Image (cartoon, rainbow, N blue to C red):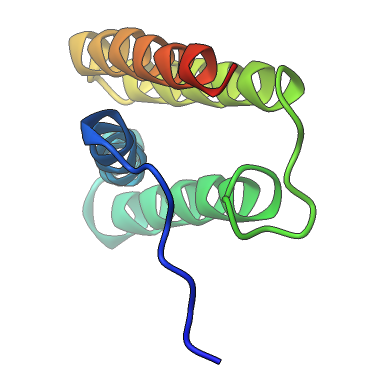
Length: 115
């Protein structure tokens, strides 16, 4: 049986995917701000993998345990704010704030479009 094609994916969905990738990159860079050398990169990769695990478990469209909205949106907002706090702690204050604002706005628009 061939895989099913996703239905109704638009530009907002592409932006949401880019935000998910940016979350991982921002966490790796924030972790590097916590320590010098390989320890900083290790902390960053650990933080990114925790975020990926949370996302894969409860937010990914193919997850068996995917949360229903609005609970999923609330958890996404909490995750985005946590990423922003880690970024700020790692010296990337404005990147963290910008990420949180854009991410919360885009995923809020996706929530509105689902209704």
